[in-house]
Image (cartoon, rainbow over all chains, first blue to last red):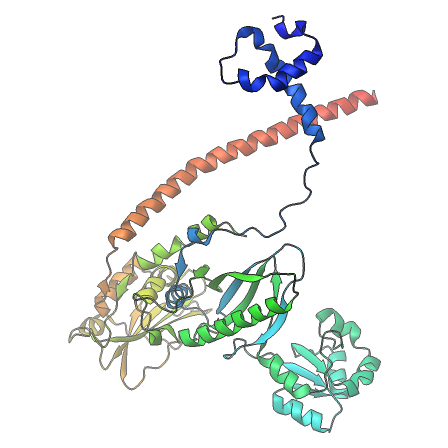
Length: 298
Length: 204
């Protein structure tokens, strides 16, 4: 079809298409005007070019779901289900875990800290202390529960390939000896080499050992902090205490980060080694939950 | 973030913990009768491999024990998986004071060295589980202990129907998505081939 619009000069076309369209649009278009439709795409692409370029990158914040879509549980109910999922498992190997979802930006600092539970979760980690032998420090370290204490004996054991500890801390007085022994190549890759930067070279060895023994390290990854929170044999009260301490500390960490950064706890999920995740609603128990004394032990 | 609906789908498993074979309440101190004394704990022993009739015992642990544990949270239940293939799979039931009459009839004359010793106030009965499937094991356990089955509630049944609907729908959805993916893969392959031909022409 020879479009009727082609008779019009191109300038008129542009004028008509922009000014007349609102008037024409609601009516059914008469056939002689149908040419305007063909013109339209061209005019639109032109206006698009003028528009600002598309924003680069994804959203600035982590996506948050609507918690109303989620079924949420009281602590005792979640524990009852998890204990059913974990039935017959080795109590030492199965644990309760908590996943704390933060409301936060994608960039910026992350929470990274250590915490000590009121009820210890881990079968205790073995700690090695490097300090001058025969001093008060050595005695204190041993009293605090360090497995391996000393200077030369530690170096010998490590050089012989016997690394029977999970953490290693050092007293500043022994640091030169440690550096001289050349253990960095052995301990370094394992992340056990004491250094001032990681806070494993300390004056007050004893209190540090105490802390490390019951301490759990946690960090935020993709807006979620995951950490073991209790043994399966824990009572609901013990678990609640641990949870409370964890959440309090994380809130404190979030508050202490930076004035401009806002980070807040969005969701708390309780799960276990072999169980699914239960979003907690903050209640301790409901009318249907079993007796608290029933939810502990094997 | 894991999609909330995906997470909720995982929780469909909760229905299977509440209902099904083994969803029953064992007699406690409050509900014990003369015929069926209270149950204090359970212990299951079976071997790692399934030959020698150990399969049913493992299935019993997988399927029935979570339900039993859910409905009897206060009763400790332990499971021991051994590498000793030749000893029979067995379930030790600990009664308070004395065993039930059915237990004394059905109990096997075997010992389970992995089962904890009964306390002074307990009497244990051992059931032999060799070559039994989990349903048969459950029937035996129910008979011995006098467990009261927990029937599924109306809400549970409705949920079960919903899950079945979801499962049926996911079959058709899977086929639909597979077709879309196949089409996309075909398109990409054809495009690649066409490009390859152009390259060839250029070389000539």
